[in-house]
Length: 371
Image (cartoon, rainbow, N blue to C red; front, side, top):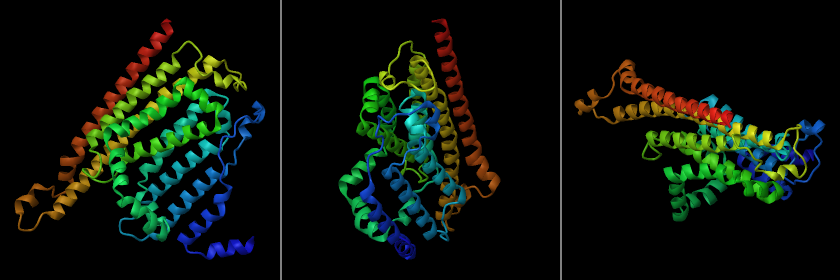
């Protein structure tokens, strides 16, 4: 074993990734093998050891580290905190699937909603805030980049799919349906009873989150990416739909998800209380994360406007004096033209969203208390 390890360590990064994939691939199995007894006293020690999750996580981390190594001295290399965001997001996805959160989630609806929050929002949000595209691509083996990625990127069908998944309506609907469909009681119960369907639930939630937050935090300037006003509309609609689903689940008066009672719910909670707490997890933390995303997207808007102004100024020729004078000449002028109005818009949108959020929450709570 030591001889194999020493040979692997001497390989170049790209070949190391290929060798690791070839070596680990035969061990891949489906996760969520349900039906395992889970005593409440030892539930917090019930870590999973699913080869597929470990494989994908290890490969993603290794490819990204390789990209960091290859682009370390590049002029446009990402700042250090973006790397931290990527690994923090990757860690949250891993913990959602392999820590005790996963087996407990099969016996407690509210924990299951925390798991979905990590898979669909928190993990993808941090990963895409890192802007990992260029670094990840640089970390792929050369043969994979030239033999697989580039041909796929040049394929007409794949380009059409990419354009479709970058449009506002599909981005919003994919994100919404990844929650709404799987919270529909018959489908939710079926996923708990069928390991393959449960696996599909988690994969689709993760992919929907990655697609959504990639569109929201895409650092490319429009029209290569969604306009920042469109991003704000998508986020606002997502907040309202999230509030609706969470409030409906939290304020209901009947049990919806009976699959949790097959093996018994953990933590000595009544079924209705378990599901109501889960509704509040969807409603409050989920909606607040989207409100934070609105603020972060506004920050990205400021940054993109600053870069656009700098690009336009660099493109203005010396002979075109009018174009030169139209661009901000000092940091103060740039702040007045770009950051000051955008901060006003950010404050207005954030205040409006928070006000609506508080109003809806207060109304729902009063209605629930009156029942």
